[in-house]
Image (cartoon, rainbow, N blue to C red; front, side, top):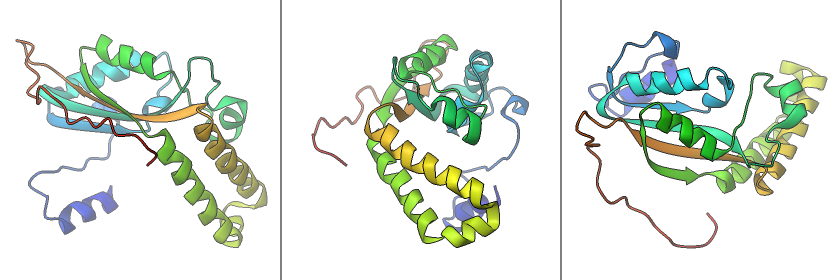
Length: 198
């Protein structure tokens, strides 16, 4: 939280942005114009996900926006699989994108936009892997040889899983409509149908 507060101050945004570091379940109802959750949803667990989405709904004021970025898997893909669950993130549960959208809608949020970042993550994870290799000795000293080798395997396999569409990362923008069903958002999103790779 300290780093983000520094960035907010550097940009002169203190009047617009409030940085808090606390458990999402402890946030009072309807406090915010917008909230974002970045790659946390896959760690909430299936049983708790409906309560998580209900909390997102009650965190924002009517017409408030919710941005969810999280990892996903295809409907027949294993997602992270046994290796990630055993060695990287035992609490991780990736679900198909459609399941997440349904859970957000079930909580009373209106999904306005979905964007896949899968191809971006091929490059992102590749950059993480290059950094790991460039700083291998430092990482081994910090975490140990076995842990370093596990992370090397995870990064190489993760990039391949994103490339082959076995895992994805998506950004879902939703809104909490007011009592009259008004979202407060522009009626026509800025959507580009241009092709090509990023």
